[in-house]
Every structure is written in C-alpha cells, then in structure tokens.
Amino acid sequence: MAGLRRRHDQGAARRLGDRPQPHRPRQKGAQRSLLCEAAGVPIGLAHDGANRHDQALLAATLNSIPLERPTPTAARPPRLCLDRGYDSSPLRELAVRHGYTPHVRARSEEICLKLHVPGWRARRRVVEAAHSWLNRNRALLVRCSKKAENHLALLQFASGLIAFKKAHAARLAAALQG
Image (tube, rainbow, N blue to C red; front, side):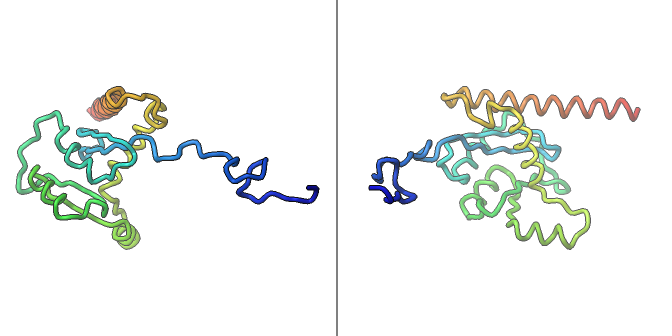
C-alpha cells in the first residue's frame, strides 16, 4: 500500500463517494427584479428564487408599482430600459400594455457607444447602482430570512431607505443653493 496515491477525485479512503460534497447542490438563493425612476429611486420590486429566469419577474415587477404614474406626454414618454435577456415579443408586448416604450440593448452596443461617444452613459446604470445600494444591507446580500414574506419586507424597507436618502440629499442640495 505504500506508494499508492489517490486521485484528485478520491476521498481519504480512496472511494469516489468519500470526497467532500458541495455545500449547495442546487442553486439556492434569491433573485430580485427592480424598477427605478431616472434618479435611481426604486419604485417597483419583485423577487423569486434564484432558479427562475429574469423574464418571469418582469410582469410581477411592473405590477408592483404602488404609486399612480404621471400621465405621459409626447415629449417625455415612459421608457423601460432592459438588457438583451428581455428581448422577446411577449415581453415587449407586456411593456407596451403597461404603457412603456421598451429599449433593449446588448452590452456590446453599450460598450461601443461608450467608446465612441464622449460622456455617454448606459441608462441601465441607474438600476445597477440601485442594486448596489440594496447590496449594502447584509441581510439582503446574504439572504438570512427563510420566508419569502420576510425577505420581501427587507427589500421594501431597504428601498424605502434609498428613497429617503435621495430625498434628503436633494433637500440639502436645494438648501445650499438657495
């Protein structure tokens, strides 16, 4: 037995079943879909398990808006900026039914515009920043709550904090200017 080496896929007893098992055999966790206004304040929120596709959350996100939306004008139609994962005719029709004009861009298009147009920023960066602000809360970054209702409550509370901080910063900026 001296000189026998075990392979990388064998455990200490040289059996294949003895190797350490992964901590999470299936994909677990939470996935959230966020709808933000132009300033980055979350106004719509939906969540589900991590094994669901993003497309399944679009209808729930659009239906979760608690505020009455202002009437759109021709000069400022409501736009819905999405990535290429949402590029399908049923999802475009869903956005139009909710009164939005869908804008779907691939990351390659955004990178090309960023390189060739000085000062250009992707519209989607507002939502990505809001996701980053939500991730600053440890209970949301590492999901501690087992119940979906508790996780949704934490998401809504964190979204409310973001809205409060944005309003407070705007009030301070207005006081400094005036």
